[in-house]
Figure: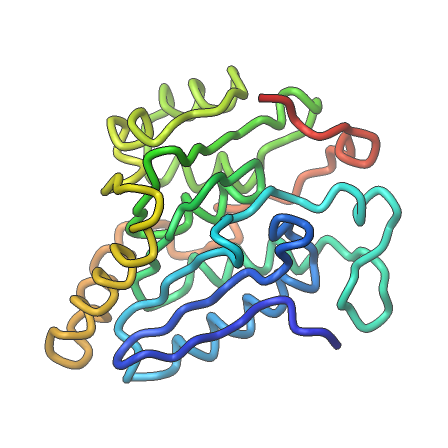
Length: 242
């Protein structure tokens, strides 16, 4: 099985890197499964105070790999066939993760990529980066984006992103509380890593205690948070437009 992610260990924190740069780090079930394994493994380590999520080649995630989905292929999986369950399982793992999650938003996060951004506790964005919940252009459902945004933002913010389906830049994302810092594009990783190192500088286990308290206000059962959609529009959809 090919490696679709990288894990980099640092002093007191770790990075998970989506590593499909030729496909702009597009999400597949195999990539999602490897992310889930990484998150669950790092979650067990008392030495990990935070986890940074980022994409290879300074690009976060272009969303679901439509080419693979529409051909019913999953590069990197055991049988090579697209099975959707691991993508939802990834979000369940992110929801249960007992470590602070920090997103380094570089270039863009589109559709399923946007949901990964919303799953994080802290987001640092490049000035030219954008996020797009563009499924409305494809006639598709937004189960993961809607779930995360209803946890972390207002219904009006969800409606603005999901109904217009356009690119939303870093300044507007910051205004709506969806990113916590906007920095020059070439400083995104530096800023995200500085946050992770800051969390690692506190007493061992301190970030776990705080994130447990933050998580305690969420519904206990994540199965009730992330719906299983029966919408199949992506099977014939084109890529979203700007």
